[in-house]
Structures are given as structure tokens and as C-alpha cells.
Image (cartoon, rainbow, N blue to C red; front, side, top):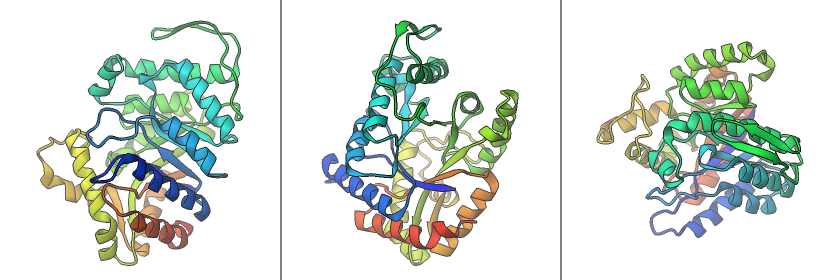
Length: 337
């Protein structure tokens, strides 16, 4: 199993986004030194926290500042974008990074983002399906034509082509309809901790069945899981140095209707009282022994190829994050069973 890190680069309290991005770049350079396999940068728009909206541009900068670590979008909201533009930009990014691109794609869920890009939220599944199919064709074929429900093209030849014939596509998916997109079109299904683990286990069976229906089978059953994470020398230090930052970020998830109950139902934004227990269930925070136990259990449940950790949360000092990264690389990740 490979381990990576994910980043939602945003401005903080009294911290301009340029300074925050510089801190995150330094962490990703450290991640490369520590042996992490990949680093991901997310995309969101029109949020109060000012999340970085252009992950491909950020990753192009990171490509120049690193040498080996895989660089991924985690996630690029494909339904908001023109597939030709995405195909061109990702091909260039794969070239300048020396073939290190991982293209993580999501359908999106926030009406504000679809309105801002003049897209209809109800079309997101169709935009996603046609968009992924077109990306693969644009990367590998010349004179691409199609007559789709969402896109029509005549004799489009995207150049240059990527270094990787087709950069790996990870599809982030929570609900069964989106998971079917991952089974039909992705190289990797990328699950996240907002969905309770027992629901991911249940939906994993549907994903495997869909792969069999597609005649892809076990050879195509590659899964990644994203986990909120912080490790300290003791449980109390882990919560003091990082856990409270994760708790603050989950309060932000609540405000944008991104949290669900144990049964997968949306949690109203006024139910702040539920957040501390949700964090304890869906994040791994503690000393090395506790973290090893939890991550080993998750891997045993899901049979993962990749685990992507998020240690960089709102308000956590960068020195605390780097300490957690070092402790994870030295004392936790080598011991995941």
C-alpha cells in the first residue's frame, strides 16, 4: 500500500494564502524526503475560507519544486470544466512533471459552484461520464469526434500527448451512482472519510460487482481511501497539536452541508453538538500505537492500494504538521499490517 498526503490550500486567520501555499509546498517537499508516494491538491470555489481554486496551476509549480513524488488533483471537479482544456492542461502538466500526474476527479455537489460555472447540477453525472471518456480519447487519439448528450466535437487533435499514455484517473465517489462511474471509467475508486466506514464497506461490494459486470474483475479493483489523521507522541499531545484543528475543520464541513449521519443522511448545520463524536469516529488521532491499530483495521476492511492522509488542517501550526509527518513516516506507516 502506498501513502500520500492531501491539501486543501486556503487562507487562514491572519495568514495570507500566498504564505499558506509556501508552507504547504515546504511540507510536500518534506513528504518527498520522507518517502510519501503522492501529494494531492483540491479544487473548490466561492468558499469563505478562500480555498485555492486552480489545482493544476499549483501542481505545475510543485512539479518544479520536487523530483519524485506523484502529484495529483484531489479532486478536480470535472463537470465544471471543458474536457478539451482539461486534456491539454493535464498533458502539459504530465510532461513538465516527468510523468508524475494523477488525475483525481470529482462530480462536485455544491450548487454555488455549478451556478458560477454556468453548469446544471442535475447534469453532473452525465458531464462526468462523457468528460472522462473524452479525456482518455484526447490523450491517445488524433482527430477525435463525438456526438454526446453533453459534448459534440469534430476532428479534435489534442497535442502534445502526455508522457504517461493515459495518466491514472482516480474518481472520488460516495453514493452508489457515483461509485458506478468509478467502476465503469476510473483506474482507482477514491473514497473519503465523510462517509461512515461501514457504508464504504457496504458500497465496496457494489463496486466490485460492477467491475465484474464490466468484465474488468479483480485486476481492476484498485481502491484509495482518504483519512483525516494526526499522530503525536501521546494521545493528549496528538489532540492538543492537531486534533483540535481537525475538529475546527469538521465544523466548517458542517457549515457547507458536507457531513452525514451514521446512516448517510445530511446533518443540519445547527447540529454542532454532533461534530466531536463524528471526528472521533472518522478521523485517526492519537499516539503511534493507536494510529497503527486504526489504519491496519481500515486496510483490512477495504483492501487498499493507496491511503491518503490529511494532516494539514485549519489553524494547525506548520511545525506541528511536520512533526506529525515525521512521526508517521518513522513509526506508523511502516507498521501498517
